[in-house]
Length: 262
Image (tube, rainbow, N blue to C red; front, side, top):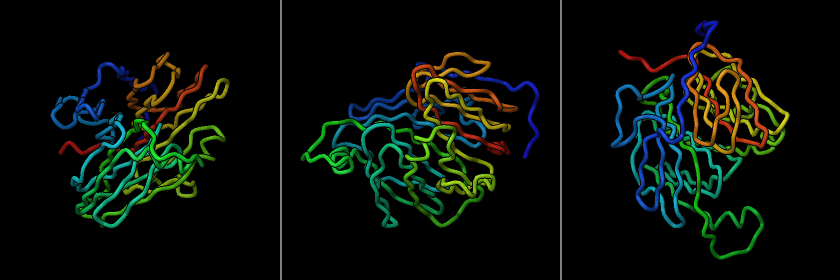
């Protein structure tokens, strides 16, 4: 692992400054260059290339489309999302359930608002809900190209309720014994914290961190107050404290390498 600097750089990115796409059925905000939005100075941080904050209306979603050589992690905040792909995998993703898709040599998949199934999960009986689904989708590069496509999902709600910074998706040996889904990059790990008043968490020490407030309001040592949708790109070392007076859900990417510029 790369040694960290004594004075890390804290690059604050506010929610309102993100790229925006709105297709009527889709309200999407992009932390990095994505689709028609391109800024050569904003293509990635560490190994993270995509951090999309998406809201999809009921009965709508992304039709079947291809991906290749990318590790894609989807984290639902509200509602439910149904996934289907060309390898025969399918599943409903809801809050507290982590999902990873390895695109590898190539895969086709679709993602649709499946909110009417949320009633089944919660034990309710209703023919149809009219709830949007709100989720964060993140892409990191794999260690190597051309791997066999794969899919994994795992319920980790109990671990999140226990508090602390919980490893959700990781390729790092340091988290091999934790109940995280595996991604094909040994230098990256995604954590989630459901911050409660009076229960701060400490960020991991790494050359690159991406701290994203997915819900609520949080405070970060050395930065101050972060609103929903705000992010901090840390370069050169972690160890800062995160806290919240009102409750928040924060996604933290810990990365010990960066995308090759060659």
